[in-house]
Amino acid sequence: MRYFNIFSTIFITKGAHRILVSDLQRNTSELYPLEFYDLIEELKKKSIEEILETYDRESQDIVQEYLEILLENEYGFITENDWDRNFPPLSYEYFEPNLINDLVIEMADISLLKRLKNSVENLEIRHLVIYSSKPLTLEELISIDYTFTSSLLSGIEIISPFHSEIDLEFIQELNHGTERIYSLIFFQCLHKPFKIKDDFKFNLKFVTEPIKISSCGKVDMKYFNTNLPKVLEALNHNSCLHKKISIDIEGNIKNCPLMQESFGKIQNISLEEALAQPGFKRYWNITKDSIEDCKDCEFRYICTDCRAYTERSHYSSENLDISKPLKCGYNPYTNEWKEWSKNPLKQKAIHHYELQKLK
Ligand code: SF4
Ligand code: SF4
Image (cartoon, rainbow, N blue to C red; front, top):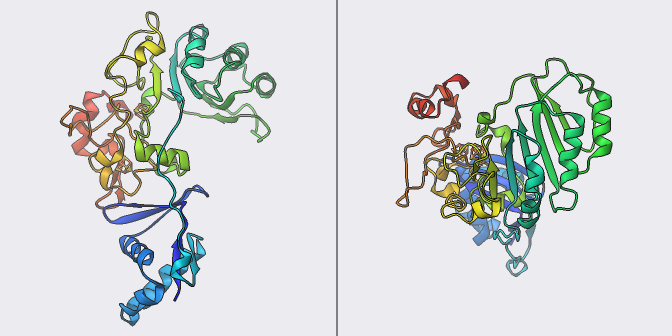
């Protein structure tokens, strides 16, 4: 008798009509028909021969084809004996000891960062995302990195407008003078100042279009993220808002800078005080399993859940917004992607958020 054993790092998400097989070690995901799911479940209980016996000739060929897919993609392996199969399952628990992972700042003035230094250390913040609508000088960029020298902060992402001083020398100096910046995006750059080679410490991007902070929340396959920590977080918590704290352009401390509710102004209270306010964490544990449509979507554990822009159609008994993210054009019941902004059912919410200009 032969038994198929699926590797514990192969994670399967069942959608309304398809399944997504994610390889959490290789960070890849592939779509398959729903019948593949039933076969994988049967293979967990029975031998290959026992399963083949229950099918007619034609269906046996299909089972063989699926078995080849399982083996070719290295989703598992075959053993000869049932008693060889006692492999421990992977734990799907998520644990991070720090209080906050991500700090997002819509930055008006760089001097704000010095005041945040202690809070970044106390909360053991790991990632900082800075969106600046004003161009940043070389000195300002180096000083952002330098401010957090003694903290646990391991990564800084900066999104700011391009300006004429940015050339190869500017970027080379930045490369020498910084440690934590891992991503730099300069927008409104009509002509790239030089050809980007991969010999910088950070990912560098020059983008032609303007980037507005309100562009956040778009759902697209290119943003899907198959990696073990992110999938585990999405299984247990909200995939965008868990352990996130933000400061908007006016200094309001919020869970995400685009959400309505403010928990105080950074001019008056600390990040720690805002975090302790009742309601700050109300969306932290809402997973996609309770979000309308997403709960039947095969992409739900690799997709980010936006609570700042939703269809505003469904609310839980605790008055939490559990509507589908507004900027998603995927229908898990038809498996079709359509332009979200043209969907007539979304127009009311689009007007509510004043997003008409995005169309
Ligand atoms: S329905 Fe859209 S937002 Fe929801 S999980 Fe699927 S792709 Fe993501
Ligand atoms: S909740 Fe939406 S707008 Fe806010 S950070 Fe997440 S994806 Fe972006």
